[in-house]
Image (cartoon, rainbow, N blue to C red):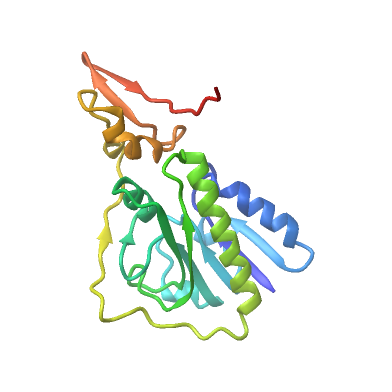
Amino acid sequence: MRVSFLCSDEQHPVNKYLFDWITRQQERHQIELVRRKSELSGGDILFLISCSEIVNADERSAYRVSLVLHASDLPHGRGWSPHIWQLIAGADEITLSLLEAEDKVDSGRIWKKVVFPVPKHALCHEINKCLFEAEIELIDFAIDAFENIVPAEQTTSLEPTYYPRRLPEDSRVDPLQSIASQFDKIRVCDPDRFPAFFELHGINYKITLEKIND
């Protein structure tokens, strides 16, 4: 099977999981991981993972199917960084949807959904581990079920909801509020790419959050 991954950001932490998957599967499938849609060569399955480019219908037609991994219980939570917004709002579990890519954002037919817990103490790298392991599970499912899947339309009785794109300002913490009240906002911030920060005395300070053992 010819499998392509389009992941725009080579610094994204999901890459390690994709590299590991490719290493395990490279003898069974012909696999490519590219950063720009212009590099795609066509094939059976295209996975769009943390992809910042719009891949239109004509470009997707080079594949038998194009799939997206989206961390919300669609049609709720379409849009950007859904698991981050949900965890900030207090969620302790996330639904991950495997769906077909369409021109209208996150509107495609559903192949499968899985639900995974996120402990309230989990920090960014631990949250990522929960998410990326679930993504690999659905990638395996897509490969195994490829010839026999019967996708389901998204529930039309539910009104879709949308999350906005996260900006650096969304990582700002108020130094006058308690840590406890802002803990979820701090723990979801990527300490390398989008660190939590606060401003005091005219200076911005980066927040580093680590667990320590007694």
